[in-house]
Length: 292
Ligand code: DHB
Ligand code: FE
Image 1 (cartoon, rainbow, N blue to C red):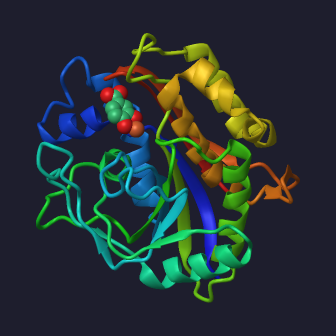
Image 2: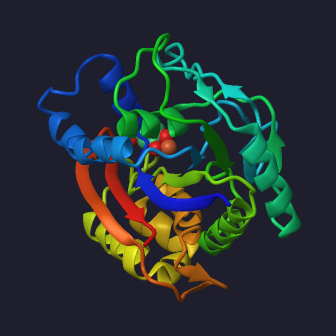
Image 3: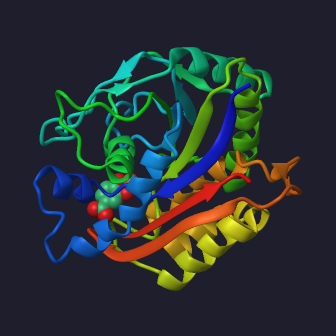
């Protein structure tokens, strides 16, 4: 049986990828940010998964207003780093896991979550920046990411968006799917994007440390309450792009303490928590949880 053993949560700012790609990680501006991921890179080596389910959002890169899937699972054998206007990031191709991805699609759709199935997709900073942060710099040609990745894209760009509650419930369905996969593999699920940021309009640059940290407390210790956070609270308190945080609830809902929408089992162990401002226009949050 496959098992989800851990969840990882992290922001995905494109400038973080650029700082890594351009060798700027030790500059004064970036140093404290990357210091927060030193533990995580070692933890990834010590707890190497067989597969990562990486919940992220596409930023009008693979999708556009032509086509807006609410939830989309990547079932391809590989995904190329996308060109977001400056050429593709110099990072390795992302290998997929078509067998497990197809199994999850089958199981989750039968649990009444209607996923879009994606057989071809380039992946933007939403996916590659979390991988870079957790796995460190990789040679784009000779390097390989530590394991296959199943991209799981969520629409948090074009309204209407899924609610946090829907995302949390979907996480439980994904765990059931993984646990019915007939191979003894170790799976991590990552929730990415967030935390507070607003990239446009009169409130551009908004950061709300207090709200972010209270939400992190809930994500860790009272996930049912975090899942109940209404949409408008994210937008008011964490800015228009703060809504990316609903993706973290998919990963949190997939942890083993959650059953039937409640936190009934033993709470996961908090292995790491980090919060830093600034990173471009974004507050960066990062948490690692392990199932006990
Ligand atoms: C920034 C943050 C994002 O989440 C994003 O998708 C693009 C840019 C930023 O802070 O610059
Ligand atoms: Fe984003």
